[in-house]
Image (cartoon, rainbow, N blue to C red):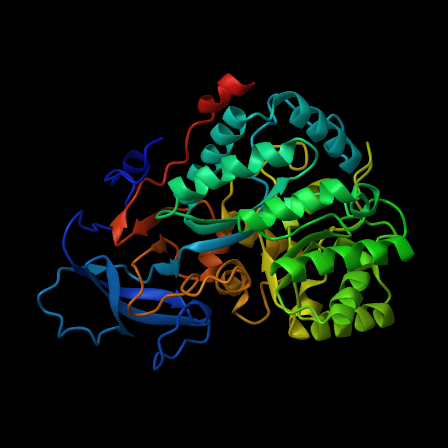
Length: 453
């Protein structure tokens, strides 16, 4: 779909009368304090800053406490009536290449092995350039409609798929450059580093050529051992040699053998790794004894490792058995991590594929589900940073995930006026602004994907 069509002003979807042209003021906006860079605006007891935003030439040229922008008399005033206003959000862990294949490749039993086998079969049978481009573009349009401004996707980099997927991603990155910022991470098994050194070298070269992050799955069902450390050493050495960040799938399991996160931290300390490290999932850490978890947390902090939890996908896959209710939630110990100063994020992960049958790249849904699953609702009020400023920092995006005077007026406006209203009605009305102008917030219809079934 052409960018002009994708970004077309949609008068039918907005609940605020934001003009299609010209400058204006957004008054009485409620901006979460953790998303606001402006000084001098104090939050209320709920962590919200009540501000007026001056929008000129598509940029935010003023952020002041509500009621103090009356001197901007030449501007039309739009009273938000306390609506939540946020920067566009940052989705740091997705799988755009797998997305939206459920109709042709459903998981037969909902298990992790079922997902692996089904995804592999579909990849080998169907993932050519046209199929990838169509589904990845569909996913991006979903994310745009929901208010996302930056996405990192993992790309299966296995065998022939490496040469297929990365050029498709690069073309989409260029097409979407002014709409959504895109990054990609290579995805392969850590075991393959030692078993197929030539293929690993090709993955590293491709990742570096396309300015991606070096990824990998560190736990493949067996307990970590000396070979695990040897593979990590090669991975870290390659990342250092090419100046790459690392973004790993770690311990996505309830197995007592899933203990590779500590090995990753040890490797980072051993190599004095200078770049960023992000570890995704980290599910089994929630099952560790307190002493072991304390030791792990200390190492993560010393290694400078950040963690992204994928609550919806992990709730779907973990502890699943036919006819049996799951006994645990499958999420990382995010509260303990954050208390220790470890950067914590939440992200979409898979969408309508064998690893997660649902999802729509909607970070508001992700955040609301994370809040309920991980009991974040009665703690400190800055958890929203986990889908905005924190992933923006890890993605090295200097001016994303926050609202600051001088930035483009790329905003997400929610009809909800408080976090409780948002959490109670996450599917409530929302508006997305690009350069201060509303865009369509209706996701693309599923029938567009009928041709790929």
